Image (cartoon, rainbow, N blue to C red):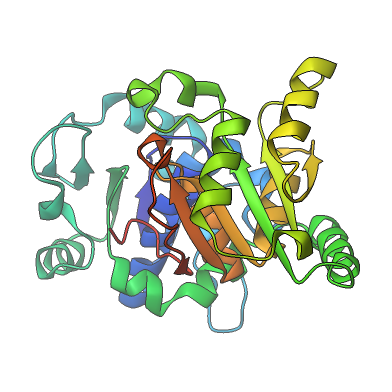
Length: 305
């Protein structure tokens, strides 16, 4: 039994992290009780179906049985998270990766060392933001995406909209314009204004913009007339529409677009491309005024870079 107590990051990072743990658990025939995903479980019906998130599905497509022991209690797992070792490496039954400490390659979960560690311990505690096994994530992508399916009330909406828009446009591009913490994080290297996004896209993609629709997704709502006028002006070279939706609505919308563009350092749009099996390209400030074209990757595997 594996107990995952990592709670690092926003939704995209949480999903990236769980893709690797899910794939490794499938490969090694283990069950994961994921306390670290608890506060995000209601985004996904399969995750919310049990008292604590537990995976992977068995061969029948059913949830494994939740264990009834002291380690499967919310309070116990919260205490473990509080007292977790601040190191990278093995510590008792902890397989631990602490940010900025040690070499994260030593705690990969596709290594022979991890297999030996797992075989020696009936119960292990996983704590790490980037416990990686990208080749296994690629192998088990379908199972991972099935578990993290978004509610059909969102996907049905976007399937209907995209089907209708396809009657008028040859290609539909989803653009994730993340603001928020990106304005200051990493020196602002990955924050672009709507006008800068428009410049990079217009110069970086060779496409018939008259027959293209760009759907804008952002944590900025552009409620003031002035800010919205700036967005309309920036994307006046093509057809565009703003989706002022919830985080799940934005994720679902991105997944259904033909191509997805987002900040290079953001995992949210990457996950949409991974889950939706779509093409994704990342942008940063370095592309402003550049003659380089955007490089699209089909179905980017989480942290396979």
